Image (cartoon, rainbow, N blue to C red; front, side):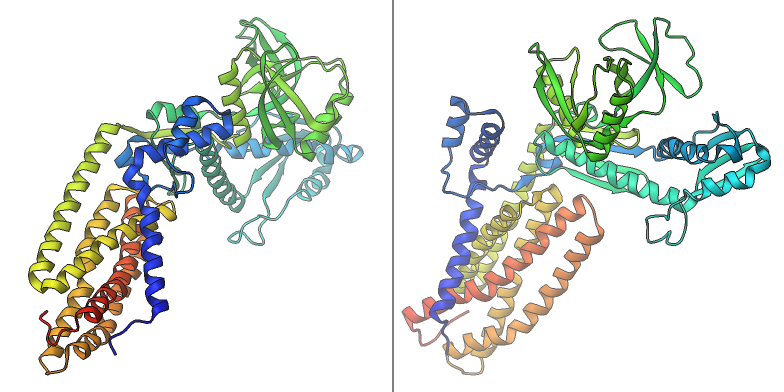
Length: 553
């Protein structure tokens, strides 16, 4: 029987209505975008008449999710950065020095005094005063080695220790270097993502490329320079013991010491120990605030490990100055007045509210583990993005119109049913893109155009099959029913293979390729739904009402 049960009809109409409701905000893109931005600003900064007016421009009971526009449609900034992963080796070995020193000090009666000496950045070198006990010293240092935390380096240790004459050298193993490179890249990608997300940009593309490069594309941002300023700042906060201060920038610090300029005191330079007491990696929170004099400041809080180090140092060095260093500049050098437990404090300096807010964002997002070199940068203006949208709109309209005319001329009334289903198909596709928060790019528009062309394939198969069944002198009801049944396997097979290709493109591709695969894959799902269920529902409803004795497809 040519019939569809009531619950199936209800479910089909619910799916159609839901998809169209979620697609509707894209028809009022600017209004809904302002509504969403105003809601976010009210939550962070408070309500104003202008923001409340923007919120009221779109009903709160309506969905407000939009299809995000990619870099090529909205304009924005594109950067390709190379991460200097080798810098992390020196920091890693420098951080091991206190542990190595303390371990050898416990055996001072056997190895004598210990002194660190200058060496290459990727080598930790130290001299012992009793080289005749070198074997014992090597045994102590090698005991500090840890397993490499990676699957490929399973069973390997993180350091290799060697001794010659009275000098002990410590290096990272190749397995540990590979694991460190991988961790550095992952950490850099995550920190860049946090920093970009903090400023509220929509759907940035931040992904690793090759061994040491990161691709960064942020739609809607003003320029590549603005993006570089946001992510290029290391925001490395460290706390160093102060050795002295000088006005001579050319003065050479002592061994294992550094000299940094002061921000608050022009012409003043602080000499301090190179190894910090606490680093920004142990920060868990940083918020803009005000000091006791009402000046903008940044309050911070350490994790338990950092709080313990900070508290122990302040307890043992009351009356001594210590420097708060941000990106190799001393922003404050207070004298420790008392023990500071709890691991919290405040940073003051010559900055305003905006600078304190940006500093808090950078500290909260974390410090980049290594410096970056920008190999490629581009700024795409919104005018170029609008040109792309216009070109995509024209291509879609031409493809859409051509398909509508072809179906109407080829299949008459049944072609009109297919055309209505095709219009609903596009609406459902945009509804799905909005629901999952997908980003639409220029290749994505190409995927939509391809979907429009492919959407009628299933209907063509069904209608041609109905024509064949009508030639066997079966009644129209039976011909329609058999047409849908016998065409189903061909429809499913053809669309499954294309859907598998879209999944492969999404899995292995990046950037524009993924944008194309998303619209293609979702378009296949909506096309199959409208062809198998929606078009058939229209035909059944028409047939139940007219009860024709003969039909012509």
